[in-house]
Image (cartoon, rainbow, N blue to C red; front, side, top):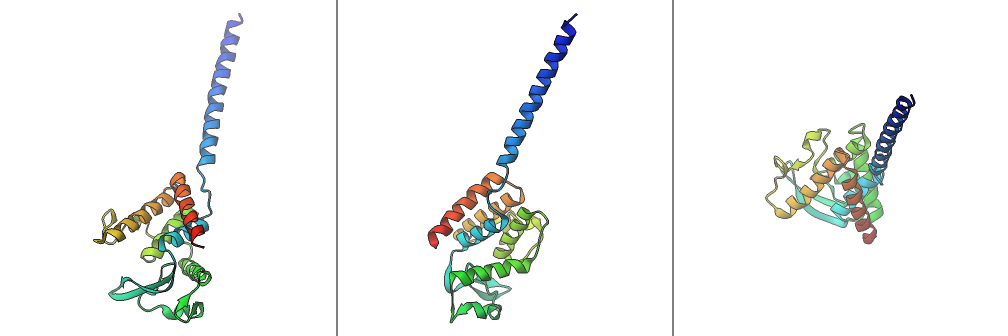
Length: 193
């Protein structure tokens, strides 16, 4: 007589326990799947850590066949943009403060490249390094590479491949990689100040 009720209660408790376990696991997964840094912090730490700081102009490749130079945190004149930054230079040099302003101005020019803030960050990082794009298919490759960097220069290829992988991590919301990589960048930037 009581057996059907006991079976129902046991079934209810078992089912409820399973649901609670799944919800708890999902809650834990959600709490671990968040970036510990804002998109701006991720972008700023990545640019500053990977580009490094140079107070003076240095040769930095070619853009559309013209020799180009960079200053600050890798801001590239693309052969003809120096007039854009005259007010930030002190003679032919730039301070870290003004280099940060310059970096921010460049990023602001790009506007919003994607609605998702972390995908937007991925596209902005690629654009800062390789030239403006809204095309996510460019992420993960550059320098005529089908996958990764196609540069013949091993140092460039190594650096670019690291950057392209990080941009893909942002695009794919790989929070573990994003958080670990950004913390390393944060430490690099802190040591350089």
